[in-house]
Image (cartoon, rainbow, N blue to C red; front, top):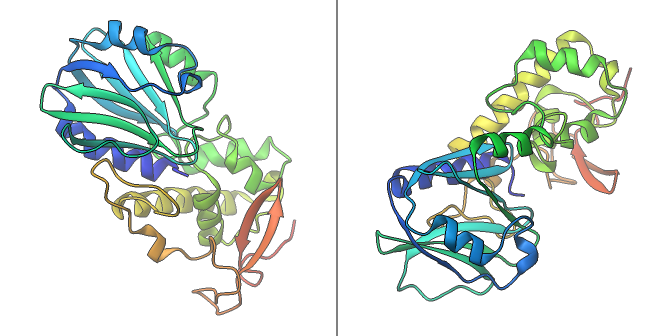
Length: 277
């Protein structure tokens, strides 16, 4: 958390509010490890006076582009939130970066657990090289049935673990992987190459569905996730499997089970998602 729907929701809410705005100052960095390839001074020198030209997303990365082709790239990890607030608002605890805009607002990065990272790239080519070295096809914009079926045939690992591998498929995390596997009726311990073409097609459609519904409901708010205006999402009210151990499966009533795969919890229906193959 946050996963693709939360990052996409934030991008969509920020885009109409900050595109065209000018950065007047950068401040507030109190955790230098948050900036793997830059510094507060570098951000100030590069971004001050620049206008925001685009807000985009790739996988779980939020991308803010500027009119000189520099890019601020944010990975929120477990607890990071990007909040657009009036500059007179008191600083929240755990605010680690502030971009002051010419609209009397500030874009603030708030991260209680300090796992989030903020990168600066000097060009789109540099950004694209960075993303290409880390991410596979985007689960929302690139994924189709044939692509997933072809990729699964070449892999022998457990399907749940594979869905969490961002180099295999970008954007899906633990929550949406469980929801997609439940939707597709695939057991999380199945090996990737055991899925038939029909099952792979069903899983691709399920991934797109759960991501689209997560975006429509403005994300899933477990723990600290909030949209850019501080509003929590609503998707947690509609989950079918994730974090529902012991509760009845919405399809058949069988209690949802929890197992651990690679130190991550996996929630599934033992009747609807049978282990075979």
